[in-house]
Length: 615
View 1 (cartoon, rainbow, N blue to C red):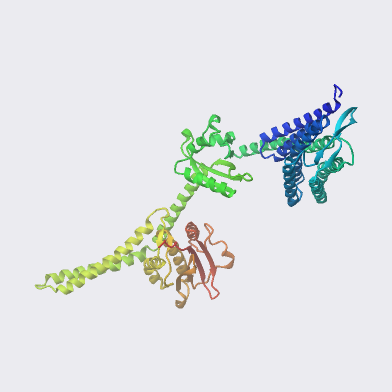
View 2: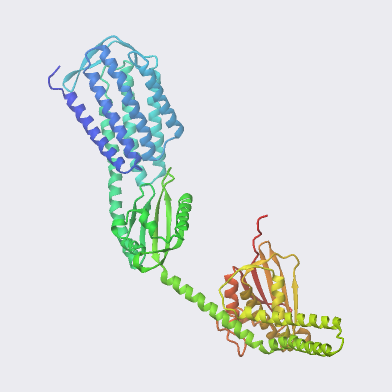
């Protein structure tokens, strides 16, 4: 044997290069655990190092026993190499039949088990002698007299299956078309197919005794390994370029978001880390020192809103969907602020933990504006009620004068009876009953007036439509009599109550009935009628209809009658119907207008039915 061995040097250089590639891609995988292709390639490269080492051992063996042991141990890294190739093809080419992949892995495991249960190995039943042949200018060991193993056919079949798997995956990817697909099919698939074919044929010829040469898997695979590394490097370079472009895009996006006074936030549920832009920190009143602590962010949220925020984000994470939240924060000395947050929870593949990204903005001014608008609407609705009652003043005075006059006459009659020597007790009791009835009648009128004059926000409660309609028509009865207008009411029996504010809904009904009476005031006596109908529209909705028998709404004005300050009356303000629609919408309902084919206008209010209480 020569002191200087070219075989040792060449194989060692190849093994070192493969090991370096393996460590490089293992490091990349350790930094990004989603880069499974890098992990597969690292395992493949380390297995190749093991194959190279055992090949050196076979070429420098001095006895048949030593040569057989090196071949036996070569099967361990070779099995890992073949299985890694299968997974690498599946990951990089994205093709390959699953059943063929599973069969290959199972066969390699079986061969490995039989190999370590055989003596000297699965390839040979016995090795009688070894010989030497010249290779790279020096003698290397080859098998001499030997008997091929009875299980060697399994190895031949496994080699054929591996070639078939790689060929199938390569052809499938090539047929998909596209420059990138065909390049990967040519570089990775073609390189692996060349190695698998040449190595399989060569090794089988040596084992079956057709050629007396050393086992040379390493040289065949070295070029293929470089081709595979080149393909992964292309992906790495492309990823690096995309990362730079993404960073630039991120900077542009951040500038755009900052200019719109939004803040960007990101929370990684796996690590607990929080990232945020400076604007987001300012909105929450946090410093850069506390930016990465999720507990600090949670502490800034108002205690009453914190549970809703947590449950909203948790629900978005569980469903892998978008979320939209509004809540209050307490950013230092700036008082309570309203924050709007919108984003998305992104689940990792095979992981229940998520990364949450979103935008936050300070919407305190918008909330203040909405509150002010609602307050103005309440003021306007209240003013509208006062205005309506002002129009009904004379009628209401007449409504009150009747019971009060009756009370006065009954009191005078009682005084006369009491002056008699023997007052008629039964007559006095009847008088007192009449006084009580008339007093209650006057009190009801005053209570209705007081409730309608009351200025308040919506206070919803279950209300029976029948009683609501009865109260409103009682309030308008005197005005209807003075106008010689008949109000007909029809309420479906057994209707479930609605959830509404009694005062505000009364205002809607009063406005609609007064408008209807205004519409028929100039009609002949038989058409001076207003009908009020209530019925169930469906299982969840009731329908309240007010119809007059007047001329109806001109077709060109139907689309505008709910607009503020639009009116068909000479002295109207144009706010009544607009307020009515606002009130109905606040109750979750709808208000529509139309004309009846037989004449007259029809206004339809649809309102949700109160949910049934559990038994």
